[in-house]
Length: 383
Image (cartoon, rainbow, N blue to C red; front, side, top):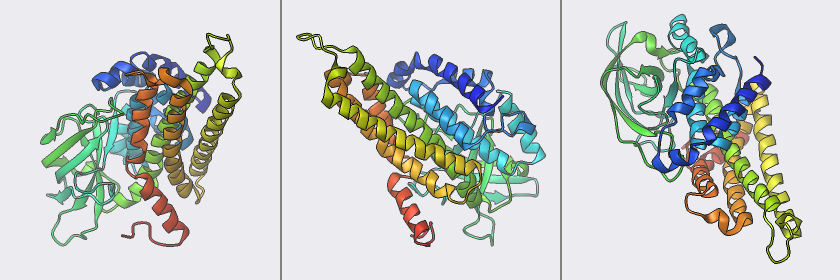
């Protein structure tokens, strides 16, 4: 099945997930039924290599899938996006064990994964974990620490965890990635974090206390975490978010356009769409949305093609779409007038969801700083 066929299936799922999106927001419900539909359609195998039963698609497919889903329910799109980020990490240096244990079930729609990199004390510097990884024997590792804002928290079947070495004499900057299964002992989940927006994500804190895992659950080699972060996590994570926030902006634009084309002035019978000022403002919004979409798609295509410039473009895509989504939703609320401000209305929900784009790490400020450092030949992780 090619990209166009996959996206057609995604559009069908979008119709389904739209039905209860408002309820999920109000009650902060994790989208279990919606993700189950994605699993049943085997869309969870979006980025799983074809040889492991998946579709073998990349960044552009992820961006477009999240964009479509977010038009129906941004929380579902984010949950699906983070699953694909975790899947990409699992696939990047997969052993035969990882392929059989994780990738093949993911492709079959029987396994949901996610990432857990953020920690309570490191803020947006998610690439400097404090969670400890210690070698007990050649066969066992011990993990101790805490993670925060874990999307799909408590519901996913596996979690990609970043750690720092705790072995005597180990390099203090030896960061590694491991995968923890849902059934793992000594995992304690906190209460769901009730945010202003993206309320269906099941964003939770995780405490890991002396969890003993098989050495086979190490991803890549010890010390590979920074490679994973900048070669896999960053492009897929930023792409999933960029696509999701683009979908939010598109949903807001559609709401404004529908309002202008269906609303009439009672005193004259004229349509709002005949007003030159409103025509101009809607055209300006469309241009902002379209140029942001082109940036995202171009960055993803560069990434899929392995172009060296892709990293900067993908960083810029997430930063730019954060501004685009907030501005488009705000303008849509203005164009729809009082109707757009109704309590628990679509635009109010989209506005709350869009606001998270600036603060989800890497934050907009941090991304622009990284881009500037790269352009000036400075180390990206400089203090």
